[in-house]
Image 1: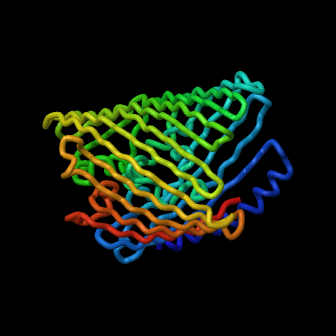
Image 2: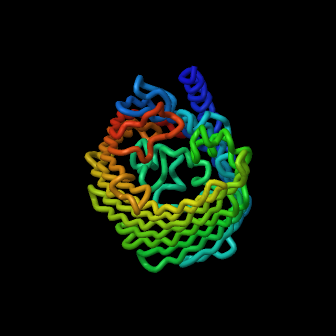
Image 3: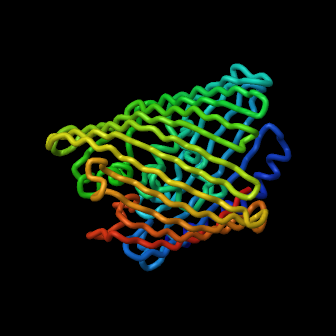
Amino acid sequence: MRLLSNLVAATVALCASSFCSALSYIDNDLQIHGFFSQGYLLSDGNDFYGNSQRGTTDFMEAAVNANYRASPKLNLAAQVITRDAGTTDNGDVKIDFLFADYKAIENELSGLGFRLGRVRNSFGFYNDTRDVLFTRPTILMPQSVYFEGNGLREILFASDGAQLYSYWDAEENTTSLSVTFGRTKSLSADIVSNLFGRTAASFIHHANVRNPIYAQLSHSRDGGTSKYAISTINMQLEGQGSFGDIALSANGYVLSAQKNLAKWTFTAEYSLFTTDFRSAFGNQSLDLESAYVQSQYRLAQNIVLTGRYEMSINDKSRPNQSDSHHLVAGINWAPAPQWVIAADIYGIRGTNGIPHTDYNDPLTERTEILAIMVGFRF
């Protein structure tokens, strides 16, 4: 049934492409684009995005986005998305982002602007472009830094609030700053279940994230040959449950570096988060440390090979009992500019990143995943 609904969404996206292309041609100030991606996952060990041990197609993403240039200083942007990812995302149609972008200052060397609405958060190299298969390094985001399997995309990708951004150019170098001030937002039942597990979530009546702050300072040298960034997050989650109030605070940062050569791209990111959970049953503080190193080789103009090693520790006080290691190998082929076909193999040792709402007890320590995904964009 889900595969049928996904195919219907694909048909809608394909039909919309002709209409949107014509509309863009009529009005150059209005650009409408979209994408559709359908995946297949087959795993051994634990389920990932549905019943993947038997093979699952419960991994689909489809969206339509628009950008309207209202004036030389004002742009309006929006995206509507439907995403199916096992039990971590149920395929509902949502507003992914919707904001007004006002460029207060812009010249040849610098710029300053503001965005208001539901804005995309700058976090690491890939968070604000994680929605499109074409812009991800692999089918699944690096689990260790981007919490791909934990179903937290709704919190991390975008925030309701205001965003300040600026940039400074000097010859072939660019420095940019982005700061998002989010407003308090109620969390869906799916997010609560992803965060605390289905059993615990059944006792939580309401939860919200209070005034999250995202900030990133990035620097690009020699026309993008070398890139560096530091990102920070500060957020507070509060809830009311059958056994009293709960609170979860999370603070952390991500260090990012990338080197681009003629045939190779090397990327490394490191993150450290401190969480403090408080409830009627007591308090618990954890330090979460994670990192990955990744290499990409352009075999041909339209074929990219990717290899990645990821490491994560859920509790630095117990590194040997809470660590996980991921090995990833993938290939990305773009037979045409509008199409991409990707295939990845994931070898996971440990349980970090396994969707807790997908598994059947007990979790195993070893998981292998074959992922295939086809993407179309217009």
